[in-house]
Image 1 (cartoon, rainbow, N blue to C red):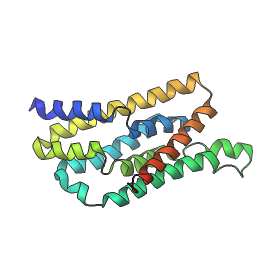
Image 2 (image 1 turned 60 degrees about the vertical axis):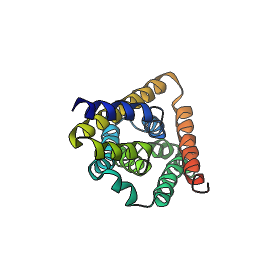
Image 3 (image 1 turned 90 degrees about the vertical axis):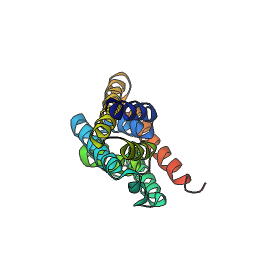
Length: 190
């Protein structure tokens, strides 16, 4: 039973370290002070998408064609990045400052992570572990690993905000979203 927890925990922790999801969370920390809401959005997105994968085994990956998952995920990353870079250009300076903020950290984090994770390696691994081991132990191991990585990304983002210019970090974060979106969409071509 202990292996039912340890194997998924270590596997997911190592495979997701430095993944696009962590970069997305780190980037979103520059756009909100509501870190707990951001964490909850990410947590529940992982809980839904990976929980379903664990429960249904490898069936969940086949419910939505991977092509459409990549399209939605790529467009979300691209849209958030472009809006952050150019969406506020026509507004006055006070509105610009407000528009760079995430209006709903929970919803933004949930939707971005949810679509980014469908068909991702952690979801596929979770489905595999779900078909091999006890559901509850696998769910706990996967969620603990993903929660620790999310907390690390949020705290790294907060640290970077204290050490570096906030506008520079926001621009880098937005460009990272654009790059991740373009890579996701370009992967459809190959």
